[in-house]
Length: 486
RNA sequence: GGCCCGUUGGUCUAUCGGCCAGGACACCAGCCCCUCACGCUGGAGAGGCGGGUUCGAUUCCCGCACGGGCUACCA
Image 1 (cartoon, chains in turn blue, orange):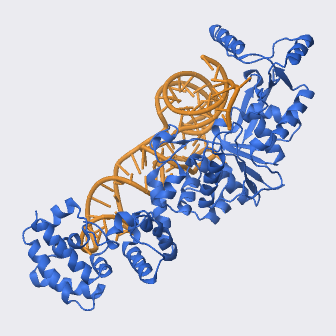
Image 2 (cartoon, protein in one colour):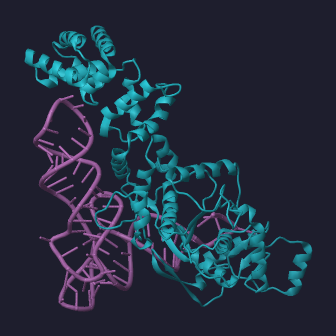
Image 3 (cartoon, rainbow, N blue to C red):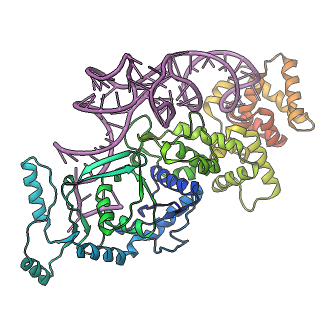
């Protein structure tokens, strides 16, 4: 039987990286075994703009390269893949449970339950909902009155249930600890513990891989599977993701925890996938970098840690930089372009000279470019004549005795260099420094700040060559003017 | 409150009773060097606490503490 896994996000439109990791584990497991991965939208208590939210979720998965064999947009043999459109199936399953005596109508009111709960608390005993004695006459009367009822599962007492969890190991629970839980609300809508069982069975899910918060509820689900006469899937409960440097659960409040943030910053999907896979999973004692194909080949649930992993932005950044190093120029240009366009630094269709300039800048930046948005932080001055001086750099490199005079001389040197390319520039500036007895740093650094405005950047000769003679000289003039004015 | 899960350096992890506890990120120092980044070399840094079992416990058991979850007509 082929392995079938699923991820069932709520349509909030927000993709928490913890959720993406869970989805990734599901996807990797399915791909590893040559099985199927499905997406199912969990919109049982449906809210606003579901469609837009779903579109956002799908976009996130597509960006990561997590493809789904069945689900929204692609359909499949078990459609629909929206729980809100599957009510008949839940109703039918509920009918069977009632018929077999596993479920019953609960006519209790909220006030009654609250009172029971309170008296349990006062008596210092755990509150569990149990069916109260009733009579056929009372039932008939309620029905005739049209009194609303919820459908509850009759939990059998005195049993011990065991989950053979693929990550957590064997976990046991006594059924006495489980109250009679609601399967269907009075309005006919199903609850998670019921709907997910029905769907997982109908969709032939073989491995339920989901967040650890569902572990306790799995016992209730076990009873539903059993009552419906369904075979059990395998379960694997993935620990939560913690905040950096802590064991506290990573919440939205922490900040950058949405996949959209990393997409917007210009991270690589390969890096994101690599990082998320390694968060709580390892292949061996030393491997860190994995391609998508390697992850598929090497992933297994038994190497997923049973304890929580903290999100580590530094590690993500390092993995990102490793991936960026390997990226071909073509994809770097493609990745960087939206950022340049958005800032108005490049406009219109990409012509050959512009492409050449972008490539030259990317080459010059080298490993300094780690995420695509770095093109703006590190390379902005290559795309605009507007020179913005970093105040600290000006203070450190330009406000020095003799610097303006030296810049005048360097301006002349640049005016005479022919051709205006890296080796020639390098030689000319070396010669200049030597002639005047200056250490290289004392020449190069001021010239860098004068032409780029920044204290750090690619090799100076590369910078000069990309900017071109006219631009360099104009910038030196502007810098000298700026220095004169104070 | 009850029940369940978890606890190795700051972080991700290795170890499936023998450990002088290994690797990676981050950190620190040095080298390279026009700055930064890259790269290279070196360094510091860990088994929550208390009991047991054992010749020997990070590894097995118990308790406590801490973190997390469930206990909902949330998912």
